[in-house]
Amino acid sequence: QVQLRESGGGLVQAGGSLRLSCAAAGRTGSTYAMGWFRQAPGKERDFVAVIIRSGESTGYADSVKGRFTISKDNAKNTVYLQMNKLKPEDTAVYYCAAGWRAGRESAQYDYWGQGTQVTVSS
Image (cartoon, rainbow, N blue to C red; front, side, top):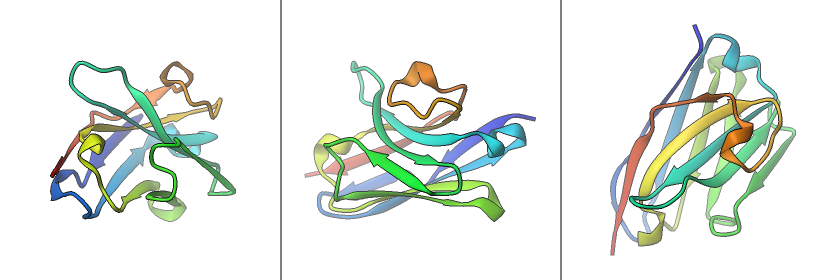
């Protein structure tokens, strides 16, 4: 079994916080990198954050740096995205992904979740 499943999305006011979770099953738990992407209606899927191995390094899109934090619980095979100081422009479907290349392009990831909706009201 190779699966990623996101959860934790919802509706929040601007300035609020949400924590997204991505549970991994099967061999996706042993990939080199896990990342978060997001896609707003009519837009491309954009990189948000990445975490390498058990958490030895992380990377963020400039638009979320200082507000979002990616982390990983290796025992639970789960990656998290803590989102603080949310803005209306953060509204999107958020996807978790796993791969071996640790890139910032969606094509560089091998496994994808089904997405969870995050809506930020002004």
